[in-house]
Length: 246
Image (cartoon, rainbow, N blue to C red):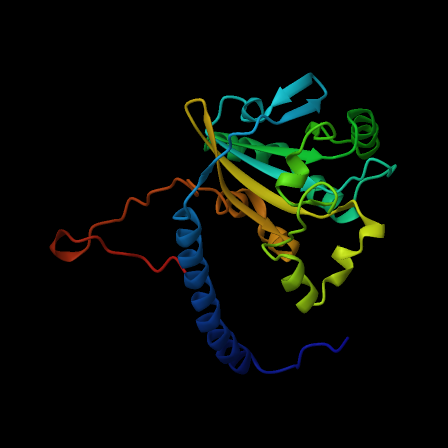
């Protein structure tokens, strides 16, 4: 790997200013994308899903733990495996108690759901030293309905919003090999609770799961977003003096 070019301080600052323009454009584009994500319509979840956790059986609404929003990490863990997916495990490794507290302060709960039986999940959780509970969807259609367990014999094949023909055309025909099914895939799904009703607001798969990046990154995937309103200082004439946050 080559190292950066060595230049004078003035040359470095000129290059840094040029890069800053692109960075601001990227931030504004991301803000606009987050707005569009919050404006997505939502779908009522009518099916009853059940999960096994350390404290016994729970429904989907139970996973909210009384909060308004639920973010589910679809953790790749086939029932036949002894260990969970390395990349999914890395995500959970980075879930600090502080991050989970920040989410809960905005009425949001983070849950990890995998298809392996609860006994395997508990063994793996102890091995990794995690405090966050893992929940098993082993006896549920949850993974199939949200297209993170691919099994043509159970549900039509779809991944990242592509059906069989689109997957084949994009070079993902390996997902269609029935001899390798069922196969597990990563994903994140967001849900909103309104009273006793649960709504599915968002799901992302493949490289889309890399967008997390702390509590703000997780909240940016949800319907209610960061739930922050800036109190802007007054400028001349009493009008808000809008700072350049980017």
